Length: 285
Length: 258
Ligand SMILES: Nc1ncnc2c1ncn2[C@@H]1O[C@H](COP(=O)(O)OP(=O)(O)OP(=O)(O)O)[C@@H](O)[C@H]1O
Ligand SMILES: [Mg+2]
Image (cartoon, rainbow over all chains, first blue to last red):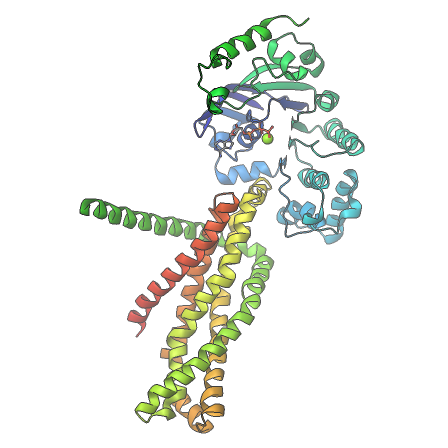
């Protein structure tokens, strides 16, 4: 999969400003970046849920941005997608949620559907919860049901939007192993959005770091952690000051709180910005 | 001032036309998805149950009360002319031709239309529609079309139930309470109500109302802003638009079907 010159403007904010990505077949590629930098939006572009303002996205040589609805649906039958908020169908129970893609597209005997669904639920540790309604699940259980649903048809490409949220260490291990196994045994191409670097480092072959509308760093996880660039050092070090903004773009803080911007005790925005940049540029002690 | 008023009126008309156009386009999308939605016929049956059967209680209660009120009011009017024997005829004609379809449609918009809008709106807000699209299931075929079809099927049936209970209510008041002759009540009614011009025309009306109310409800849910406030507004709009459009179409259809 190849992304070239992606540009997106949402409202008044430019989310992507020339993003180039190469996602190798059969590998696990992770996309990381600060909250609100557009990771979910990127996944939506990749699956044709939202069209970018400019740029091209090629899957197997097909440009997703130009596909008709019909062609998109054909493509999506081979794609699994884990929504950030799970997006389970609340009218159905766990079993029917996971079985939904099978029932909609294939005419299979009930017994086979049952076997496939229970196998996938077993893989995420929720076979016993098959009879519960979607609304009776905890957040972490919903994630895993949604994961089982995403992989039910053994897709060739799976996109995970934050699969590790709300998972306890045991479930996390299980899900990590599942993602890795899918890749190693079925040769699935996976795209993973996550914030937990330790987890990402264990499954991903390649990591892209997205910030400020651009790809600021990429490479294998180990290389990225030891990367000396200020972007990666700040992001993985979790520091508030640096080139990656922690704050959503805003007016001057003092002015927002009602102090005059030129109040002697309130440093001006320019001064704070300058301080932040110098600190980021200094080599870490 | 008057220029401002004129501009406001023009903008209002343009806005209304744009809304009608958007509903029309959505209707075309639903019609295009009908063949695909036939595969989900179970979903359609489930929706007929939800919109139709679950509305029965309110339709029956209201039908009974409307019939009883009609019985009282028309008995009084007819007694001025000494024509109380025609009570059955007058009640049943008003119900079949007018009150049955219209009142049922208004109740249907309040009972079933709002729940359709809120349900689809919440599905939109919680990404369930997006999830269907990602599973290569067309939400228009799976969610919108079955509810639209259910509205068309359920409305005429509900209107018939409403009419039956209405006539029963009028009979209760006229015959059991005010002492009209039972035989006169029924024979006058059966001899002057025509199946084709009165009953079937009413059925056509209720089919049209069912289609319109279901279309508005589904459209409002489908295009709602994905927030709590968005769903609330969409639900309100369903009732407001449905009521206006039902009464407007009623006038047009009455003028043509008379
Ligand atoms: N409908 C919209 N209109 C305007 N801006 C939007 C809209 N949807 C999202 N955004 C903006 O787009 C940006 C990217 O959103 P996105 O959901 O892709 O972030 P994200 O990287 O997935 O964040 P997180 O890690 O918190 O999930 C955000 O800054 C958000 O404010
Ligand atoms: Mg996100």
